[in-house]
Image (cartoon, rainbow, N blue to C red; front, side, top):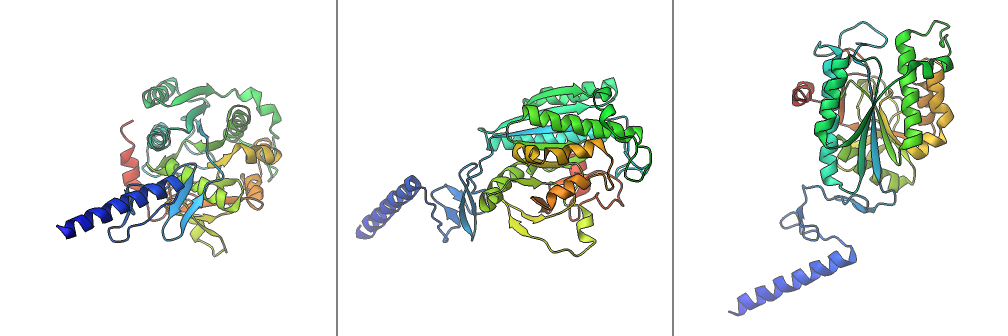
Length: 344
């Protein structure tokens, strides 16, 4: 009987201690059963509290000073152009519209997952389309309507921007019609973000397939790393193969569940804040007015001054030609990601 009373008293004191720690904002670890009693979670679960703290064992806790309040996805679509600058076929060898639909589906699924985890964050999708077939636009509308995520669809008016684009590129060659439409769509995306968005913006082309945890990981990692270094960031969700073709020094950061490394090159799919967009506005817009070589050179100039980070392993698959150095991310189940998004 005495042993039972002693055990009961011990459990009672333990509960009181846990409650006090919870009130004071401290977390405790029970290493005997790999649990965090103050969070009522196991150590292998997500221990982060969005907007408040980032917890990663054994490094402990980071207070979040850079809270994410909103995230807007700006999706640039064009189902009539298969490949912008080359005639090679894409991975899986399908019609361009199939990549667009599956890409949009992967974004919707990942956003819905993030919305469940972070109900206080405002999410929305803006589709800026150029010259897609009517039936393809109907299909995208149907996908968005079923998502229960705030969205809008807009058509690009090429005449609104084409006069601002220099007709000769960095190689003194004529800028192609496809490139002009691409530059105009990017310009429209930047203007939309500057005039309508509140916090984070994800600029994305219509040939990226995203993992289910893509947006959750980007949000939590953005908060954690930005709070650590007290700076805004650029995140690229793809772990491009070019990163493994040369030996360059880099910085490694610990995100929510993945490692992130500093990179100096991306394509035009990336996440950043409205703060950085406004700070480097002239650089961003210069990409839409003159075809540099490489095309993304203005972005790369920004990356020399700010932190652009890419995840290891990848959070997204760029569905381009299998031999592209900006294509298939290593150590990723490409076929599974493709199949997971077929039911749109």
